[in-house]
Amino acid sequence: MSSKRCTVIGGSGFLGRHLVERLVDRGYTVNVFDIRQAYELPGVTFHQGDLCDKQALLVALKDVSIVFHCASPAPGSDDRALFQRVNIDGTQTVIQACHEAGVQKLILTSSASVVFEGTDIKNGREDLPYAKKPIDYYTETKIQQEKLVLEACSKEKGFLTVAIRPHGIFGPRDPQLVPILVDTARRGKMKFIIGDGSNLVDFTYVENVVHGHILAAEHLKADSPLCGQAYHITNDEPVRFWDFMSQILVGLGYSAPRYHLPYTLVYGIALLLWLIALVLRPLIRIKPTFTPMRVALAGTHHYYSCTRAKKDMGYQPPVPLQEAIVRTVESYPHLQKGA
Ligand SMILES: NC(=O)c1ccc[n+]([C@@H]2O[C@H](COP(=O)([O-])OP(=O)(O)OC[C@H]3O[C@@H](n4cnc5c(N)ncnc54)[C@H](O)[C@@H]3O)[C@@H](O)[C@H]2O)c1
Ligand SMILES: CC(C)=CCC[C@@H](C)[C@H]1CC[C@H]2C3=C(CC[C@]12C)[C@@]1(C)CC[C@H](O)[C@@H](C(=O)O)[C@@H]1CC3
Image (cartoon, rainbow, N blue to C red):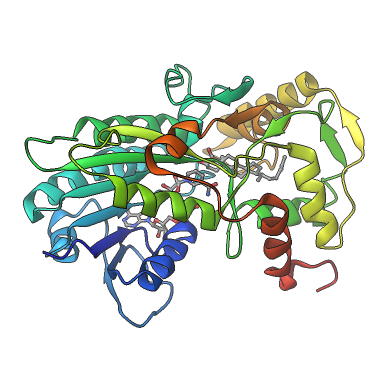
């Protein structure tokens, strides 16, 4: 079995597609497994299916030595049952299918948010405990998913696993950060800075996240320190949350937020709106823009050390933050003001 045959589960998604493109450039033979086929690429074989379906997965894992698992329901979905089914039960199915297909390495896309509880994290390392009170179902199930994958690592069975924990991925084709930001600005809701605006955060360019995944796959060996470990992958350039948002907004022709609102006030309002939405759910579906999670992410410090990734796999982010912002802004001409 060639060590350059791999399957990307979730390969139609934002991160997954960038990963697939890079793998192809590096001479890998790539299968994509996803519930939808979003594009076509020479040399890539698509398998459409649900990762909870082991038989469908087994077809896509045949003769493959590396599996990248970067599928997940969208974090904004509030569907607890879906998160449980895909991120927990589905990941168990992925592990089982890897065993049956003789896959040697599984690289999971986890998230740095598995340790975030809505309060400041400054230069957080991987040995921080998992969040005891995860801020949403997405995070709750990402924690369980990461545990499952890391516990499955077995040198005896010849099945090695590692988890990559990116934070705040952005870049061309991102369906989330920039589109939500622009939509919020177009509705006139991006005038305010939550808190004093000094909170530092990691935003990570998608190509750097891809680089971290490929390094992890190539360094994961039975005698390497990567086995069964989690790694933060960031741009290693924490930035003020509101400076980052302002740069994207101004780059796209919108005004930067200017007026300050106290963090506790906005968080309280977001919590109240979330409760109202929950109570009214049987009658009407309301999706507030400023959820408690978004307010917490916008008003606290959350940046992470990637010293472990530098030491164990020689990670350095190839694309610096300023260049990444410019490339991202240029990639969204349709979201420019007035477009
Ligand atoms: N975007 C971020 O800021 C960020 C940060 C940290 C971690 N992550 C993680 O990175 C991974 C990729 O995120 P993304 O931003 O590219 O999301 P995305 O929504 O663009 O991609 C996820 C892909 O998974 C697929 N998928 C969902 N359910 C599936 C199922 N049951 N079976 C098969 N495929 C399924 C979707 O069709 C989609 O193509 C996720 O695991 C996410 O938790 C994302
Ligand atoms: C206040 C406001 C409405 C800002 C608009 C931008 C937000 C939509 C955006 C800012 C930080 C982002 C973020 C995520 C989603 C989009 C944001 C809230 C994640 C929660 C997505 C899931 C990842 O796993 C998280 C991670 O650990 O990287 C992201 C954290 C940052």
